[in-house]
Image (tube, rainbow, N blue to C red; front, side):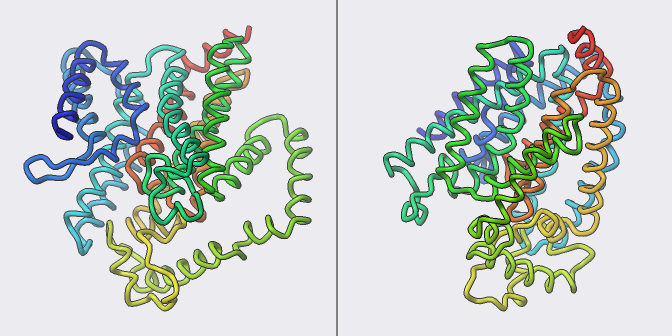
Length: 419
């Protein structure tokens, strides 16, 4: 019955792809957590999200043959993407579990890169990014609502998280809530500003509801890293990327004073509490492992096995990842992976500068996208914000928003609108 239901949903989605490709791509943004629906086809493991991407990829390739689609935008992104794929291939070759590594290579690298091209070429009109963001928000709402339900009823929280009443939503663990909803909140704040600016009040109401519920969900999941990452990302972006530096400092300075005067906040930020001590032990062991595997790392999905000989802190478990964005990439993809990540970060900043230069007024999309990347990076200092099916796709989406915000037609339209 389960597989039959999935099959019916995929057929319906295939019809949507055929009848309205643009709507199908935006619907895909609303169901990124559909990777949780897993199944086997002829013995090969896959997910609902993966099959949906396969359908829209076929539709996109057909569109490529039917009419010319300008792919010149992709040139700056090709080299870092290729380096990333080469690092992934090496990660599969050296991985102890080749099947697990192939699954990660496919889901975390190949598929997000494919979707990057699909989404970018689907954005045609000035309002398309806002529509795409609305669908992301629509996908966030049921997760946030379920988290709120779990919190107030105590029901449907999986072990062992029910003991602390840490809501998980549809995810298997609570931190996944903050990892997924954090960037959407930041993007939603940009969309909210835009909606109020042009007096689209129904849209503004939608974003107020989505941001409010998502923020509550992060609190109820007790994803403390997201509590820190969201405000710090907004403040740093305000300081670095806007002309409102005095206003940002007026908020930032009292925040710093509050941190200095509050021991509980100090201990959390300085990693002096229990979870912080676990992270420090993880990183110590990971560095010891990387001293002897510095070039290629441990391979995709190879970190737990590679860390075993260096696991000196027996009081903590061996996790799937080191829970640090640099160490995560280094252990999985080696030095090449780090080079690709730095390249993509530099390219993102370049796109932001281009968008700002071409726009005589505030380019909200570029600001929201670069702030979302900053939020993911800050959260990633103590967690794994990329190595997950939905998060890899979400990162690709943010790259698209940054790249598209720098196009002259989009920036010019912002300028005309302001006039």
